[in-house]
Image 1: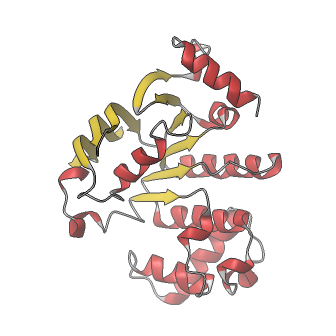
Image 2: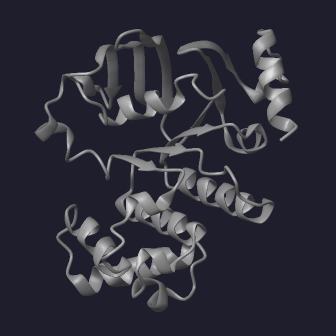
Amino acid sequence: MEILRVTNLTVKSEKTILKNISFSLELGKVLGIIGESGSGKTTLSKILLGLYDKKQLAVTGNILFNGIDLLNLKNKEKNPLLGKELTLIPQNPMTAFNPNIRIKKQIIDTIKINSNNKKSEILKEINKFLKIVKLEETEKILNSYPFELSGGQLQRIMFALCLILNSKVIIMDEITSSIDIENRENIIFLIKRLEENNSSIIFITHDFRSLKEIADKVIIMKNGELIETISFHNNDNFKEEYTKKLIQASLLR
């Protein structure tokens, strides 16, 4: 079942930033996006989430989410989708939290927007899912401020929130950059847990090794264009010379 389809997405300011980008995402699947810095990966994620200034960028094409064109929605129609149906896990998870408010209140407030459950029921659910993402000292974590926790712990909290909210499409932007092998393996475990929950994932990265373990298909971007779509079920049969060089460079990191 298709949950997201992007067709001829073009973004312009003084110059063309994205040109005729088209792809689809199936329910419960992982789509990888890889490309060099400046290829348009992060811009694409911002457009998908509606996080851009319409006065500065001209956006054309279609972004169909469950059959609804997100580009045609007004902010008041789109905002209820963000954070629940469409979620971002950023490279630096600290940016997703208010540093002056304890984790418990931030999580509860986020869940209450989308739930009529009592606070005690919400807390029970939070504790359950924090343990699923391998955060055992739940009381200590919930009573902490964001700056008292590591980036890895904050990332896991965001994964737990995605599970609780049953997020449909989750965009992960360079979340495996600058981490060690153990934490990388933990993230892959969490992504597979989200897949089991039927969440669909757009995984933006420079890390080809991670893509090979989790992605069902991968789109290659260069200078704002999609130049190739590859599948690891096709024996790595890459057509473009740029794709081969990009992947070789990624494996050398």
